[in-house]
Image (cartoon, rainbow, N blue to C red; front, side, top):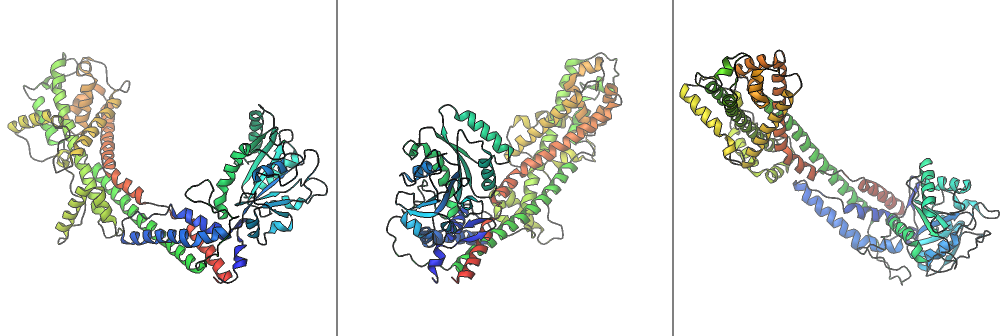
Length: 617
């Protein structure tokens, strides 16, 4: 590689932050762990393979080289005189390297402490023009520790403690007695708002005082909009030997380790990414792969993600269109003529010898026949529940088939059909058969008619007396006798339970409407029918059975129309809800294959391309 030495100490500027080339590669490698292409399109397999190949390329050929070339991250300790900066620096190094003193500015010139090999990788780091470099193997290799001294003291250089100094991390150090100094907070606001990771360290904290001090500091940080800055403390007496004991520094070291990946170094505490000690002899570095080629691979991968997102977006649009159409179909299942089975049961119950003949012909003053009427209304309720259950089950099945049909359409991306087959195999097979049947006809492809739709669609044929009795008997049995069993039209066994749940939901909604105070007039007829009986009358009227509507007028007066309208609206909501539950697996599958395109990939590709162009590599 041409000009390797320059590249080893190179810095790539992006807005106000500084990134090494190793940091770019590390950011890319971290982002690749989240890159996936779950949409089952043919291009997804190739994109996944490209992503895995790029990750392996980074692991084996790029990062091992760059991590040995990456300069250490500079952690700058800044604060007033005697607050424990030097003791903290010595503690981080595990050795007394910088003299400490509580009463006077001991550190006249800023000290930059680094491992010898790491120091060699600093190259022409700008901070070296302001600080004296001291190399010692005791300094943790990924870090270089900058003891800035007291920027406020006479004779010291304040320029090293400015926010624009290119350090990796700021540790603003103060003491329990001086944490409220205005100069300290001016400095904290300056570096904390610069975009560089910043922490506040309070030293010499007496035992038992930390909670009070931390609460006050938290309040002050919130007041200056710096609540995101972490706050650490060092107990009083910890720096008696001019080096803070390592155990006291564990929280600070853990936080510092978490910042390392931004500077091209893996966190030392992550066992999956071990760090080779920089103080060990460095073998000859293998040639770094072409940055231009690497930038091209990253750009291709970013394009793959964009294509994947566009495919999912097209499928989402097709899903939304189909769902709206299917919801409209469910709303259209509401009755015009009454359901034949319900009308037949009512006719049988209100016939000359039927249990509800008195209700059908009576006025409010007719003596109640509670038991007889209750039995008749129970039979009517079973007929209503059965009709609604079958219609809801059919709507659910039609919704699945309709969505599977939509996912086979010409306006959806390749892979949608395979996804539908994985989500709802039976619905996908039926959609395929329907598509084959319509292949040679002019009829537009669409979802099949809901099973049980005829229950609410009505019939023009009058029912005879024998048919009425048979219908009443069949309605009395209903789905309750075969829980979980199949329903008409080939719906899935689970549709029966969904249908029953929909019927129960509608009944509960109508019960709530009937229970409104003042909705039903007091009287002997109302007392005999009970609230449950009135609910069944409202439901029958909502299904366009005429006689129950007349009885409701006696019970509620002008409110009858309001009850019926509310009941119809509740039925519409219940049927649409059944459709939505049937479509839920499709929406869940769509959510699983969705992925927001990475912002890191195009960012890294752009910067790698600029570096490659500038360095000719």
